Image (spheres, rainbow, N blue to C red):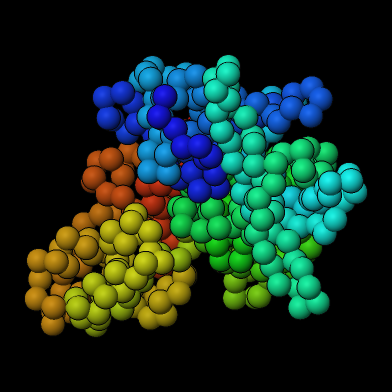
Length: 416
C-alpha cells in the first residue's frame, strides 16, 4: 500500500476521495478512532466522508488503498451510505481533539508547559496493517514574550487527550471550516458532540453563524441559539433572513421569543414580528418579507447590477418585483414582476416599468402550500409574489417550498 509515513488529519480534511475507477466519491471531513488498553495509541477505525449535500458516511480504513494530501483512493466503489453516527467510546479526531488544551510530559513523567493541539497524525503499523494515531502537533508558548512554537510529540508524551477537557479552543476547527459552504459547515457541526458544536458556533462571527443556522433544522437551531447570552442570540437573529428567524423563534417558548424580539433592533424585528402572525404552512408563513423590490423608473442596467450582488440567493435573484414607493414591505402599489432572463434581452438603458409581467396573479398570505406549489409549477417560476390589498408583503421562493414539502428528517435520510 502506498501511503505517507505520517498523515496529518487537519491537512487531510477536504481532500477528495476516489473509487478504483477514478470517479470522485466525496471529501474527507474527519477520522474516527477508538482508544486501546494500556498506553497503546488509539486505533483509527475509518474516515468520515462527505458525499453530496447533508450526507456524511463512514468509510472503514480497510477499504483505503492510498492516502495523500491530494487524494484518498478506495479499493471499492461499493459503500454503506448510512448516515454516520459516532458510537460510544469512539473519538472524532478533528471534532474532539483539535484545539484541546494538553500538557506535555517530561522524561521524569512530570507535565511541563501546556499548549493546544493543532493537528493529529496517523500512520500504519507495518506489523498488522492497522492505522493508529501516532503523533500530536502542539502549539506551546515559551519565554516571557509568550512566543508560540509548534512541536510534535508521541501520543504517550501528551496528557489530557482523551479525558474531557474544560479548556478547548476553536482555532483549528475555524481554519477547517473557513472556506466551506454554510450548508457543509452545518453538516459538520451536527456531527460534532454538543459541547463542541456550541463552542464552534460561538466562535463564528454573527453573519457567518446566521448563514450556517439557516441550513440547520429548527430544533438544532434552537439548541445552539439558547446556549448563547440573550444579547448574542439577538445579534445573530438580526443577521438571519426574516423568514428563517421567524421559523426559529416559532420553535421557542413565547416568553423567550418575546424577550429576543425586544432585544433586536426595531427595524430588524419588525419583519420577523409580521411573519410570526401568519399561519404555518401558508404562503404568509413561508414567505420572505425582503424580496428584491425596485420602482418602475429603474433602468435595466441598474436592476442587473442589483441582481449580481453576492448576498442574493439564486432563487431570490431570479426576478425583480416592481412596486410604487415605498419599496419596503408592505410596499406601495404592486405592479408586477420581471424575470432576469427578460432583463438580459432588453437594452440596458430601458426602464423596467416598460417590461413588467402583469399576467400572474399574486398569492394571498392565506393560500395553503398546495396552492403555492400548483401555481409555482404551472408558471415554471422559482418565486411568487404575496400581496395584500394591492401591496406586496413578501415572496415565496422554491427553496422555502421544498423545505416545507420534504419530510422533517429529509437531511438525515439515506440516499437510494
